[in-house]
Image (cartoon, rainbow, N blue to C red; front, top):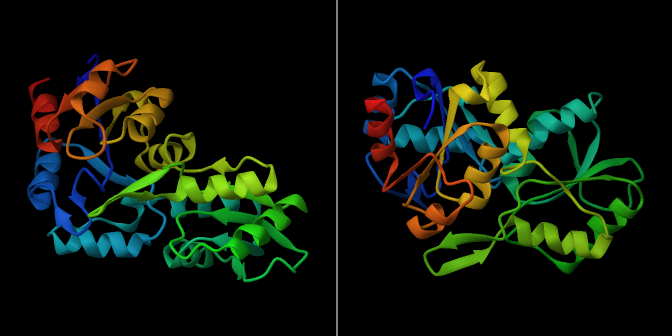
Length: 267
């Protein structure tokens, strides 16, 4: 791993790195204390659109970690920022997703349409929706065919649950793509939008940043495309064999985030 001495910022995935569901994988408070001891600034970035930034801040606080709002970036938050850039005058959106996504978009000043009958819907925004229906897919497809912008929060086809993998946001988005014949603009990892937002808030370059995550095809791939350093942890989705056969291989492959920090401390 070259020029690691220049690192200033750690981007940290949460699900599969800090916790699984509500259960911590490691001592979350000690991890953040160690990050601060090493002099890094930290941002938490997640493809999960079902919970708001405030929910994540509350969850981190429950583990003894206090972060500021700007240090947590969800795919819903990144989607809202993108939409503000595209539609600064705001307006109506049609959302296939849960309250975390809807609330985040409302907080940025958008209105949520509950029907495809409105002619002035600016965009369809799709994410994980565990109450997905045929009607929602049909309404979204109609709006997209009439010219509404089509955004997807993240491409993850599955999500881990206690009962095994379940359909993720990518499965929801794919159903709307099939019905509408249009590809979604993906906001979450591995696309650049969340990484660019984090870099902007951190005030640093990709070369000064390392992404720590558990999914090769999202966390690691996107960071590599941006020119960031990468650390794969084996506490989530991807295993060591997959990491070692990935091209290019992540800069660090470790059992958990603590091990990666100790590698960085020795550089």
